[in-house]
Amino acid sequence: MNLENIDKNYVLQTYARNYVNFKKGDNATLFDDTNKEYIDFTSGIGVVSVGHGNKKVANAIYEQISNITHISNLFMIEPQALLAQKINSLSGYDVGVFFANSGAEANEGAIKMARKYGRTKGEHKRYKIITLEHSFHGRTISTVKATGQTKFHSDFFAPYPDGFSFVANLEAIYQEIDNETVAVMLELIQGEGGVSPFDKYEIQKLSAYLKTKDILLIVDEVQTGVFRSGEFLTSKLYEIEPDIVTLAKGLGGGVPIGAILTKHKELLSAGDHGSTFGGNYLVTSASLSVLEILEGLKSSHQLDETINYFDIKLTSLLNKYPTTMEYSTGIGLMRGIKIKDDETLGKIVQEAFKAGVLVLKSGRSTLRFLPPLTITKDEIDKGFKRLEDAIQTI
Ligand SMILES: *Cc1c(COP(=O)(O)O)cnc(C)c1O
Image (tube, rainbow, N blue to C red):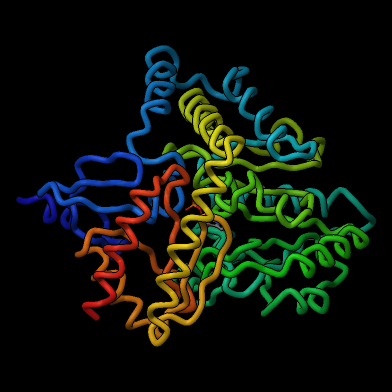
């Protein structure tokens, strides 16, 4: 049996998979088993923030797991404590951190926090959480219900937990709030929903209003966090300090890690929440190394230069194909180009793959770019050249 058939026989077929076998990775460059080269503008959907085959992270992981990989959260874990301290200092406001293993799990924990807040603060119980259309918050039974896209709310998996509703836009949140509302959960730039940033002023206004009502603001930074937008938190770019922020994707450079950050440090107590793997030696030492690299990129201004350079290339591509491409969107290295229709978008992604550049689809016919934050100018040049070759064949 060849590898494709082994996959098809033994792995549950929940993904519409592309049958390429990558054998070697070097920063934003990948090679398959025929030695064909690809430029990776996806970083494994925003995960491989410091590139493929990063030797510094590999060494940090190797050193850690040659010694201790896992102990359990019944004991103090040195790299976990140091990572929480680092996240606190990078966030720019005083947050405590809980470690989970994925984005959905971080959001689950955030939902539990909000519900406890709604149960213990105020005179009557509040439990409702408002989210937004086109959002994405995960695949567990409650985060999928929090996701504001009915295509995810299949009847196969019903009944879903109560207490979630989604509205069309920020303005509609104000009407949706009632005396049982405890939180609003949103992404500042909707990742799966078309790489669409919300207006900074509208977000600040909402954040201030929620404070007056004692309603929590949960910002899902699973995709926008960890320097993706140019700042450690996109919340900082928006100049807000949410009650709860969730992180995952780019935080571990490829190891599975999620985090819940909250300024309500006393809200959860022993026994309220937990995770077997969460924040173990392996993932937290990897993440410490990732953050050290990214902090260096930021403070040397290299990250800002990469963002500018990527923007120049993206804009010049957009200007060349005004009939296929409508406008660009996104912030930092989380970017998109609105394509005229879904069919053309599908063709572009397919032809780009053939031409040796990996790009992603997002909602609302958006071509999505999430390159490693360490991508070089040379890799950016190559990637856009190949993308243009691909578009010319359509
Ligand atoms: C990817 C994503 C999630 C889900 O993360 P998983 O690690 O796949 O569970 C949640 N929210 C946002 C905004 C995401 O982009």
